[in-house]
Amino acid sequence: MNKNMIHSANCARFSFGIIWAVFLLCSEGVLAKSRIPISDAEIRLKKNDCYSDIESGLWGQQCKSSSIARENCALQCLSPVCYELIYESDPLEEGEKDFTRSSEYKYCMNK
Image 1 (cartoon, one colour):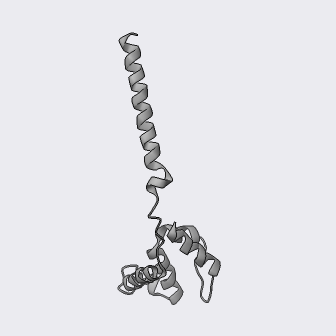
Image 2: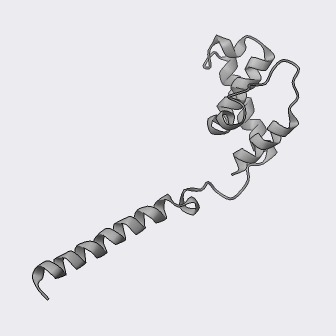
Image 3: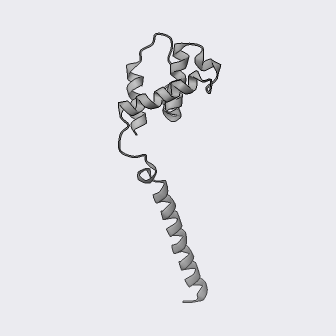
């Protein structure tokens, strides 16, 4: 075998190794959050921290304009990704009790 063929074979193996490593690092198992679900108590504590941030003005005046605006901001604070998936296109409205979306949001937080 000549040197060019050996070099090409080594480059191909190296490239395949790099591609495989990137694939493994990007797979769901490696990037997934802890499989330990967040408890209701932990959610309540974090949500209370969000309410405190909202009351202190960190989320702006729009989050203090009504109780439902406060709740939407708290949900966004608690998990921006889950809020975007579940509520952003159709935020909670005054008096609304959406148990289905609430369950979906909770499930999203535990993923």
